[in-house]
Length: 75
Image (cartoon, rainbow, N blue to C red; front, side):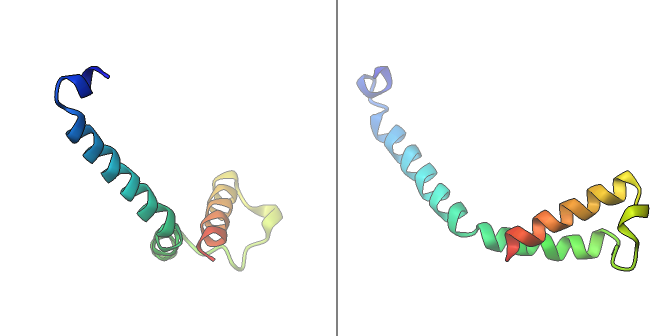
């Protein structure tokens, strides 16, 4: 309320409107974000396709779970 009384109300409304628009854009582009991230992960992380799941090390299981989560969200 002090901001509105001091004359900063228009700036505050503009900032809130910009944040709301940004939130809407991020909501609709979630799939696009995850698809781009999945492509980057294909380049960065090794493929665990031919490995036995029971013989994976902890960090390989973490990579596998992360890649699964990204793939699930990108579909």
